[in-house]
Structure formats: structure tokens, C-alpha cells
Length: 260
Image 1: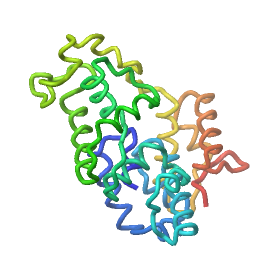
Image 2: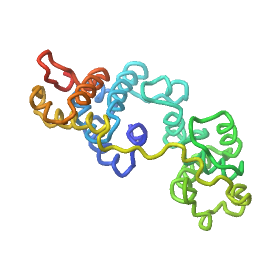
Image 3: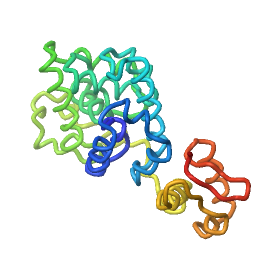
């Protein structure tokens, strides 16, 4: 659950939500029994709320297919809703102590720079990324888990995308990228930071926030919805997309409510 919540979200924001979820739904069976409205409300302002729906779908399958226990193989994990390559690998390494390479943006950047001597350009994980990660991963499962965690932290705190602190890096003496003069430094930042103000993400968030504040089972009328955002066309488009994603239900009269 924590791995899914922390996708594209800072851990400092995730922790209180994760703690609340674990108190409310301590296992997959409990979460599977929760209503969709309860799950969306508990998701709060974490962003990307479709992840909440995937977690509930995942909980149902874990309960029904795996006797309420998360599976311990990569193939079974990625067969679950909302579980991709990174999440499955991270669970196998950090939770189950298996020797498996974990590849997020930070880890790929460290490995590409230190061992291949070139800048990491982001994007989807490529076969050569996985081959490199497997080649340098320690053979012992316990050491491999520590390596994955340490490399991830190194990329987040020291070997950063724009301004790496090479003078503080424990790999400085063996880093091929530093030895080559850090060619193309920063060119890997191919995706600029997205603005939030005025975007559909903001409007969708406003709609969900208004619905979450209502007493359970109540609806927000058309007049109240119209007050949420001045651009009627954008507001209507966002309402439609939320309905299509299964995050709200639009009523015949133009009102809306969380799924019941």
C-alpha cells in the first residue's frame, strides 16, 4: 500500500495517510470490504486518486486469489491492479528480502552515471538499464536489499539530476561519469515541472474535495458545483472525466456524488 501511495508523491505527505489507512483497513480483506466512497475520501489530497481505486481492486484480488496474503513472486505481483515493475520489485526486495534489482529514476541515474559514464536521460526503463542493475547487484539477498535502498537514497540526496554533490559522493573515486568530466550533465531532465494552477488536475481536485466534505451518501447539487470553477467548459470536462474514471457519479439533474 505504501509503495503505491508514494508513486509520484513525497513520502512526508504519504506517511499520515498510510497510517490512517492501516488503522482503518489492516489487511486486504478489510480494504476489499470498504466502499468506493470511503476509499476515495480516505485518499484525501494525495493526488492521482485513481490509485485509490486500484488499491481497492488489488485488495479484492489478494483476498480472493491469494487467501488474503500478498504473493511472493514477481509474476503474481504484476498481475494485480496498480502493481507495476517498480512496485513489484521494491516489494520483493524491501519487504520479502529477495535478490532482485529495483529500478526507479534515482537508481537508474546513479548506475548509469557511475558505471556507464554517461548521463541518464530518464524515460521508460530499457533492457540495458536492467542488465546493468543486475550486473552490479550484490549476490546476497540481504546485501542486495541494502544496495537498492542505499543507491536510491544516493540518487535522491547526492547524485541529483541537476546539481549532483560529487564532492560528497562515496562513489566519487570510481565514478566513470565524474572521471569523464560529467558529460551532458542535466540533459536527463527531459520532463519539465508541470504547473498546477488552472489545470484539469486542480479542477478535478476541487470537485473531489467538495464531495469528500459532504456527509456520507449526500450529493452536491448543480448550483454548488457551478460555483467551484469559473470556466464552465473545463468544469464540465473534468466532471465527465471523473465520472469516466469511476471516481464520482453524475446525477440526471446535474448534481454529483461519490460512488455508492
